[in-house]
Amino acid sequence: MENRAISQAVIKRLPRYMRYLTELRSQGVERISSQELSEKMKVTASQIRQDLNLFGGFGQQGYGYNVGNLIREIGVILGLDQSHDIIVIGAGNLGRALAGYANFENRGLFIRALFDIAPENTVSNVRGLPVYSMEHLPEYLKNNRVDIAVLTIPKTAALSVAQILYDGGVRGFWNFAHLDLALPDDAYVENVHLSDSLMQLTYRLKHK
Amino acid sequence: MENRAISQAVIKRLPRYMRYLTELRSQGVERISSQELSEKMKVTASQIRQDLNLFGGFGQQGYGYNVGNLIREIGVILGLDQSHDIIVIGAGNLGRALAGYANFENRGLFIRALFDIAPENTVSNVRGLPVYSMEHLPEYLKNNRVDIAVLTIPKTAALSVAQILYDGGVRGFWNFAHLDLALPDDAYVENVHLSDSLMQLTYRLKHK
Image (cartoon, rainbow over all chains, first blue to last red; front, top):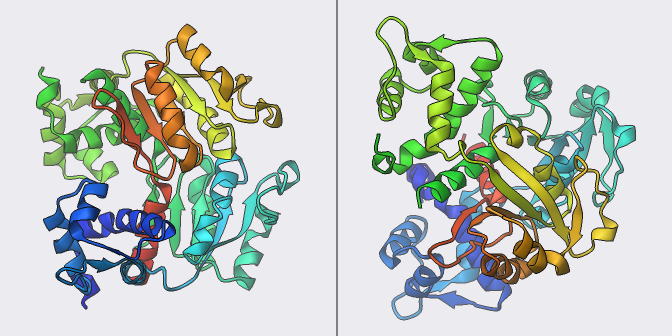
């Protein structure tokens, strides 16, 4: 298997396969045909066969795909076979919402702490996670491994905090601040612009 | 101008133009060349000219684009020249985070109320917005215009609540529940799966 050969378009579809397959597994489904998966996901069966054949191709004629195997295999490709240590910068509503997703832990995504400029104002009501002062961030980074930082802070603060995180060794950035975060090439940034998707919706409502 | 001729790919880029141009305007910039915008947005200048020419083409040789005009014109295409009345279903951390985006109002996106199964447990600390009991949702829909409902509730509840909203006349759905919401064809759903983007990040960290 040569992961690097998988196209960006397929990679973008994998989390969606993951969601559907995990849902099926939780319903006790152990195997599924590309046809059935196709109907559920509203993707053509040939697209599904083509995607899933890329990494293993353990679909068997007359049997279909083993759901557990697929979940495991997709997880390996997505890097979910490794655990990730995550901190959340900003303990406002959005930061607490993201820190509160208990489901992340099933995927090896462990939120370790939140940081905020005013930690005394934030109730540490998120699954017992600590909320530290931003002042302690550099020291925390010295003493703890952090794979991913989640940025839920105003854009005016995002650049300088991202630099502190980068200098402290963090290379994964899940950025909810309202700017496209640009960092050195060895940092990986996933920008999430929520209002962009809301505007897709207003577009579609206007042009229906 | 024939909006319907604009491709889906361009529509997806428009909110990003909107963000950059709004930022420029807030810095007092009144006009910009495709070359300058290209450097800021890390898109080729020819792509920018091609995109912007689609709706008006008021870029002038040696002058560039008028920032305010572009913002206005993109806003018209995205439906932001009309106001939208929005309610948020679920007054947990995520619901309150989304309801708290004061910037939405600058775009004519007005959040009017939150609904929750346990409104007495939720502090109405979001810009003074009311938090109503879910029981009152059908009656609210009878008496108030709602263009968009934001769903921040567990997936087990999402389908039945979406049906109540649809029956009450809501046609725009901004869905954060962990399922791909399917509704009749005259409803418009924008599914936001936050964990999908986190998995894009773990993929890139693994295959760097």
